[in-house]
Length: 269
Image 1 (spheres, rainbow, N blue to C red):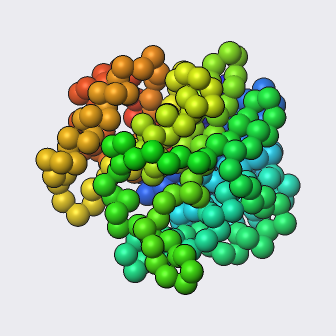
Image 2: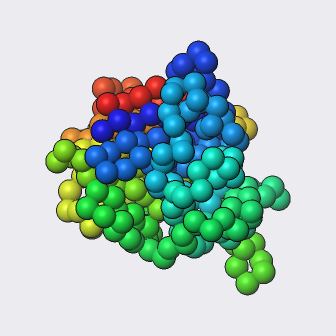
């Protein structure tokens, strides 16, 4: 299996674009797929630099309904008219950060190959999607600014629109998420309900980025506690994007070689 970070906040290839967003290109035995598409058409430009033909992609998974994961869908659809674009139905609803709209471009919903789903779906013997994450252990603090619309009014976002992709390949299980808005520990709890144990590999942002200043002591405590629990697992974690560099460095101190940074243009084989 080959996984390429097409879009991430930091650059790992001198000719690739870095932007606040995430897109992962994956080749399995049966599929060429994208998990998310970044914020802009950077996904197209970086794929061209890396020699990846996005017209051959058969599946696009949208991890959740935010602009920095869905912004490349419209540019992608101009060169690929056949790939299934799969998202939870609630990902199509409006989402906000304070007063700022951070949801998807509504034009995406007019594409004929968009598939809105509800809950868990097995796509085939390689690919499985799950949602329904309700736990709140070490819940990301940044979520408190985020909202959705219910009965015409803004309410705290419960991230029912978030879904995770599980890939089975060569006897290993890979868990791919976008931002882990529901909290990585709660995502792993839900994963265990389904599969009975921890995955071999996880690729995700941890949504710990703090744009408006340093982490508080309470926030640092949550970050370290999360890292301590993850370090006890026989799982390798790849992370970037919304994790933020200060949080990543705190977690790296605890997790060591079990935590690896993502960068635009780099690949995992």
